[in-house]
Image 1 (cartoon, helix red, strand yellow):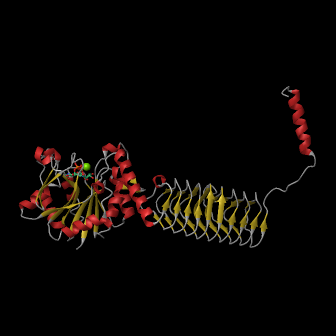
Image 2 (tube, rainbow, N blue to C red):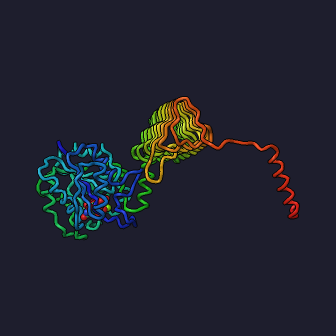
Image 3 (cartoon, rainbow, N blue to C red):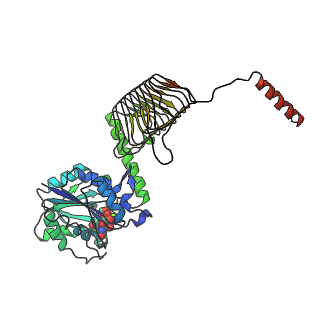
Length: 449
Ligand code: UD1
Ligand code: MG
C-alpha cells in the first residue's frame, strides 16, 4: 500500500530563543526536520509533504536538499495541528493510500515503529502512536476501552480523571488519506485553546463507527525538542545510542563518552577510536583503522589499516587509501592519499593527489589558493617531499622525485628528479664567535655583567 508523509514544521519554536526556525536546529549534524524525514523515508513514501510556516523560506530548501521530491506547503495562519495537516490536502490530491503525520521537531521515531503503525492500519481506520509517559505533563491523553482508542483529549480540556491517564499521544497519526482529510473537515475549534486539533479525528472516526487503535513505543522515541535544553538532551540521547551501537558492532572506544558521532557515521569493526575524536557528517571508516586522540573528521573516507592522528583534521573530500598515515597537526582537504602514503607531521594537504607510498615531510604546505582560485597539487608515487616544502599549486612532483627541505616549488618536477628551491648556504668561518664576543662586550659596558 502506498504511503504519504505529512511532516508538521510550521511552529514558531519560541522557547528555542533563536532567529533560526526550530526544525533547522541540529542533532548529530542533521537538522531536526531531516531526522524526521529520515525516519519516514524508511517507508519509501510516494509523497513527502512538509508543512512550513515560520521561516518557510529557510525550511523549504533544507527539506528539498535532503529529498528533492519533497513538497513544501505553507500554513499561513497557525490554527492548530488539524489545520496544519489540511494544508497538505492539495499536494495529495489524487493520492490513494495511507497518510502518516509526523512532527518536524520529533527526531527519534524509529522506522520500525512507523512500519508497525502501517501494519496496524490493516485492522483499524485510525492508528495513533502512544507511549506510557513517566510524567504525562501536558500531553494529550489517549482514552481507550480495551484495545479500542475512543478519543484523544488534550490536557487543557481534560477532566481530573482523564488527566490521571498516563498513556499519551506522541502526535504521530496514520489513516487512509481520504478518510484523514474527511475527518479533518469535520474538526471544529470549540475547545480550551480555540485551535483545530488533529487529535479530534479519533472521536470523530469512532462516531462514524470507524475503528481506532494505539501502537505503543518507548517514550525516548517521542522526545520532542522545544528548547535548547531539550536539544542538548536529544543530542546526548543520540550520542549514547550511537556509541552503544558502534561498541556492539565491534568498534573499540577507550572513552566512548568523549567520542562524538554524526547521524551518518559508519565505522568498520576492529577500528580503535581513542578519546576525544569528533565526527562531522559524511564520514566512513573501514575496519582495522586507528583514530588517535583529538582528531576531527568530516566528509571523508578512511580505508583499512590507516592511522589518523593524534590531533589530525580530515576535512571534506579527503580519501585515505589503505595503510596510510596522517599524523599530528596535519590538515587535509579534498585530498586523495594513495595506499601507504604518509603525512606524519604539521602539514596542510589540500586539493591534492598524493601517490602510493609517497612521504610528505614535516611542515609541508600545498599552497592551493592564490586569493581567488584554488589549484591542484599532484605528487607521484614514491615521491619524497622534504620538510618545510611549499608546493605552490598548480604543480606536479613526479614519481620517485624529491624536493629538498625548505624548498618553494613553483614549477613541475619530473619523475626521479631532485628539486632544490631555496637560497644556497654559505658558511663564514669564525664569524659566529666574533659576533658573540662583540655582543658580550656590549652587555658588559651596559653594566649588566
Ligand atoms: C500535540 C498534540 C498532543 C500531543 C503532543 C505531543 C494536538 C492538538 N495535540 O500537542 O495530543 O500529546 O502534540 O507532543 O495535536 N504545528 C503546526 N501548525 C499548527 C500547530 C502546530 O505546524 O498550526 C506543528 C508544531 O510546529 C509542532 C506540532 O505541530 O511540530 C505539534 O504542535 P504543538 O503546538 O507542539 O502541539 P502540542 O500542544 O504539543
Ligand atoms: Mg508540542
